[in-house]
Length: 253
Image (tube, rainbow, N blue to C red; front, side, top):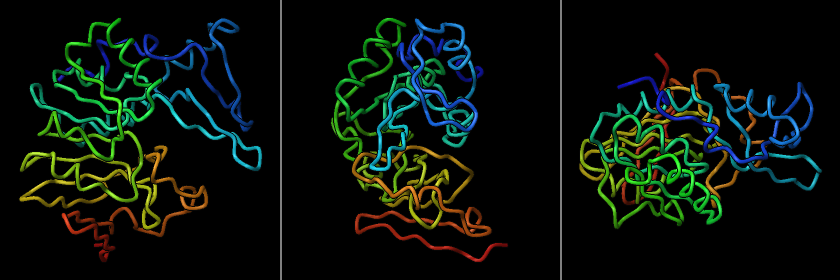
């Protein structure tokens, strides 16, 4: 597989206004027309690019949508063990850039976005850049997956989940894999890899991946920002079946 994103220009997917955090300041908007060089510098970096924000009751600005950091996407794609020809379900289309880089690597992508405006913008960007024939964009709740397009060899989730929807397991082929950031209190910010066998998904934490939560699975910032217990990544185990989800913390070796 070629280097991730080699055939895709992220600038083609990023809106004219992004949000940046100068040093330790609060997020502030940056319009491309006002400072094209600074805009281009942020977009060309391997870091995440915040594209939407919201303000909480305390006046703090928090990101609600972003183009994922390239090194995190590389970690997720490596964990998924993508190969050309596989069918991939992506949960959380965002700008469409992640779907494009996976399609550029030779997989068939179905991507689900709950926000209709984001889905439309991503579809337009994928059309402009020549990826529309390799990526199907669906507007809907990602927790439901994409049953009409199932089944999938891989599921890659670009939003954090505290509860893994069983629909993702159902729509993954036997021997397939789900890669998802976790937002539960046991190990918030962990990247999980779940292998699907005979209707169950069994997984572990393989690294860090801090993503914004699924819309209906929001967590307080106190949970998302909490310091993990020592060895939490090594101890975390999860099993997802039709009857529910079980998390255990094993004794670290």
